[in-house]
Image (cartoon, rainbow over all chains, first blue to last red; front, side):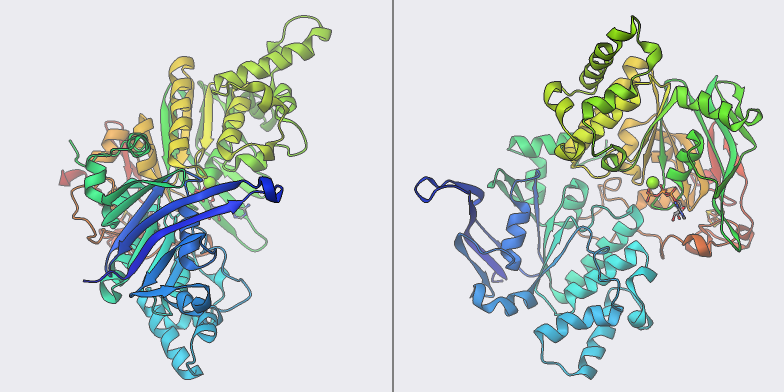
Length: 260
Length: 329
Ligand SMILES: Nc1ncnc2c1ncn2[C@@H]1O[C@H](COP(=O)(O)OP(=O)(O)OP(=O)(O)O)[C@@H](O)[C@H]1O
Ligand code: SF4
Ligand SMILES: [Mg+2]
């Protein structure tokens, strides 16, 4: 199967303030390359400031890369086809449940991306909103509710509904599971796994929780200081971590692959 | 002897037309030198219980208990003022959001110096300021901050979350408490930093024999650091026992479900398989189920569950359920 998303030599550096003849650069991300197929999950781990969020921002097009290419289905993405990118690569943040606009009903919240990115008429949009709500385990009656009427887990489902309503191919989960309560978290993991099966979604999971990384991902990339220090099958890396940072993280979570 | 012994503590929120039982008959005891985890999902009443213990809830909340002993003393017989002075001498608490508890307009050094107990200072009053300063520096060393010069001159917003949390712990230590209540001390931190804070607390427990009540919404997060665990659900007592009992043979369907749903506790599960979960979500305070509050979500629920279960005690392993899992092991 061909790769869904191909990233080659992608990098980002920021110019630091200074004179033009004396300008320094700070490198947020050294050139990196990877591929993801449909139905696959790539986990990205790394300490704060290691470049995880920069990578996410480059992929969704919120930042312009300094070098490198992103290809989706073999087609190069650039800043001109931003609309197309918005539709195919979506992102869910850690607190996206709490950042829903409180003055809009769920219907309006979900209608927004449809209006911006599609030419569907109102009837078709409503139909799609209903279907999407059902997919994430909510009721069609919830359309006329406001965000404050939902629990934390339901809000997280609404932001997931918002992310999948455009039928994306890639979803980036930026610590989206971190602050959830355990029982909500397992419900959310199940939901994401189901959707991956149904829709063939590829996920990029940015997370600290190694047990979730182990359970949820096929491949793993470890970032440190803007560099890829390990990349391969999740299970192989967790079995034999080579880099100091990976070893430290495994130690700090008392992570074990087998219970003894 | 128990350091703290609380039986059937309830906390009621008085609103204009009704009252809500936010914490419903919860018991909690702590021994000297014990590290106990208080675990429950968001809104289960952990913070309320902690605030009730140290007596900082405002008058909208009504607290009742059948027993409230501190080091053998019956605190219910004392006036609120006497109670407060005893508790504030021996118990310290670090709150859920460290940043919001520090005064943003004062330097860390001044805030720390102020927290130092006057009784610990000897010498003449003109020496006191210097003594306070030295005590503050010592406290920072105790929580593992070596570059105290910089830290003392900083304002809270100039420090990272993890450093602020260390400062909060230092302030809590200033009173040399016998019991430290730590409410989600690592909630906003990265795992590598979380480990540092837990290790710090563990060393304080070992070196100073300080008891610690460690509050967390995530059971698997604290199991490594605790001797015993008390579990709450939606304001009700669920189960209490040693960490091993809770982790390997939980008696309560809720604890069982928490463990079943955790990828960490179920390492043999095939990768990318569905996790076991409880259906539904935590009830909101305005619509609490009657009887056992887990009822609508519980796989073992039966008719009897509309009446709240009593706590049964099996050699120190306590469980509050009509149909406990005890006999299934
Ligand atoms: N000031 C308040 N006014 C009204 N209700 C409150 C107040 N503080 C807490 N509550 C309610 O009391 C219940 C218990 O709250 P508490 O803060 O003790 O939960 P918690 O277990 O600490 O949760 P978390 O893990 O989110 O910190 C919740 O349902 C909460 O909504
Ligand atoms: S008392 Fe009933 S509803 Fe409550 S946990 Fe036990 S079996 Fe379930
Ligand atoms: Mg709390």
